Length: 475
Image (cartoon, rainbow, N blue to C red; front, top):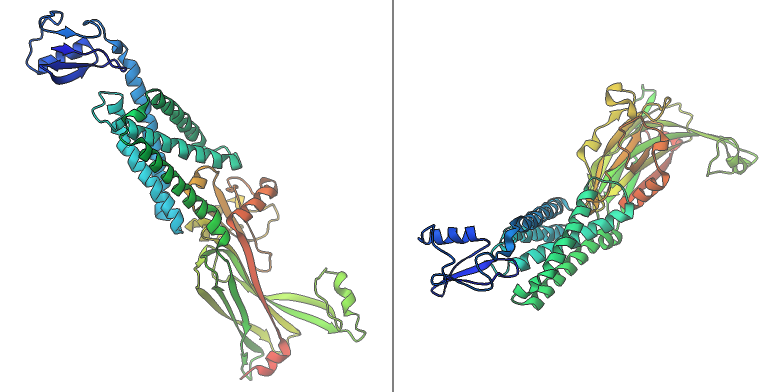
């Protein structure tokens, strides 16, 4: 029997008649191996006629502190398992929930990284154990490099906002772990066990480049280049009336077509029909009245004392609804007017706030209206003591890339709608956990979120003469 010198890990190989029967960390483990081979438990291992010791006798066992090796193995396993969970969470969210193909491709790459790390988990035990598999070190190295790249990217994205999030501790811990593990592997010169180190390095580089290109395309290039365009219409139809009726009924058709290339959410929408009154200005001084009384941006030379009131107002498709690329939505209404109305013109306006679906995803709970005047809905929906009566729409919005969702606080989209009131909407980190006050909202944050999620407003306006409608009225 020959017991070889300890290797760099303190493991001594045992051969009997030129055949390797095992490797041991200690004298007790050597006796256990021999017992399994049928040797008696009391065999004299110091008898030179039976055992030939190389590189030290039976008292030389460098791995006397086995706890150190086991501790390193445990720390490596915990870090790799944490990284595996992180890559799985990112990959699954993007693969199953992303809107665009490049974003889904990023998710697939992260899931592939998770598979590699899952394979590397048993390799940790083998590498800091008996190293029966030559590629165990290479698998661990690949898993560590993936962890270092992912956590570095997450920390870089976090630095853009520098918001405290629970995941920050995990990112920093895994980043430090990957540096520690990389130093350990470099010290062991783990690349010596890789059959083709150049091909291995080239594969890692290509994978990193593909991930970077896909991520950059999905976050930066695609959202910027994809067009957003809508075709909106508001059209008055032919009115009808009865001979004995003091009213006329005016049909009104609204339509919106997403003629761009990106599906959108309708955050809040609104149609308004106003009736305008005016007095004829024989002196032609109407142009000078635009800056007196209620400030207006319109003026007519022969129209004086122009005023208006809202005749009808309502929602179009509804907050939280979607409008896919090429999709058209129509709404038909009938406006009732007295025949002896004093209105000179009717003005119909259709408008809505939209959010690109390639920038974010709104939770379904957003579409549920919450009346501000109902206490059971929570007083925090009321904007102040004299807030008025609004329907409030509030829900979480998630970015389509889970990397960004993980590195920022939650964002919420909020909209207020009421007839004869200005429609308001915004995106912020405010979740209405306490009573709403303006000081809770950061103006810079609101501006930044509008640009980030491409939150915009479009509208169309149509005007018609009331006298012309009366002449068209058909009994």
